[in-house]
Length: 193
Image (cartoon, rainbow, N blue to C red; front, side, top):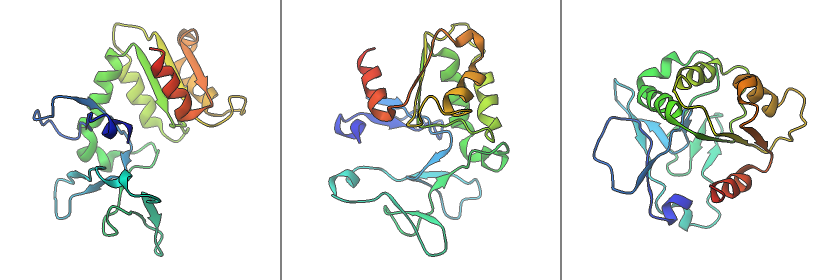
């Protein structure tokens, strides 16, 4: 919503298209999104993005609901099932659909100096993300900052903070920080850059 208000476009990096609006930033959603769905009848499992334009102008609009059969559907269209990948080890069935996103994420991570993670709890079942992180951190520059923003209290035993510390290792202790104030903390941190 904030990007829309500022008239900044997003590039989800789903495809290799070079025809992007001039003011566009990459927004890498490694586990899909509620505004994505698989194109019907597509043998390649191509992802279709439903634009957010106009959604936030309507009051009290919930972006998704759970219907009687248990499926999660967006209110953008009751006939579309969101493309969201569970945080599990084997993501092989999604590879064709998201390979460009994952490739771009590894490239961006290898060139990053400041990494901010928002709302990703790094579940132990998501070994794929750990592999992507390992691949993406082969870059020559070390991180200057690695900040995690979540709503779980930092003191939670074996919680989000401890899982990130385990992932990053001892070499990143001096650049890692955990913030339990979620989006609010992220906005403050971005403002301080």
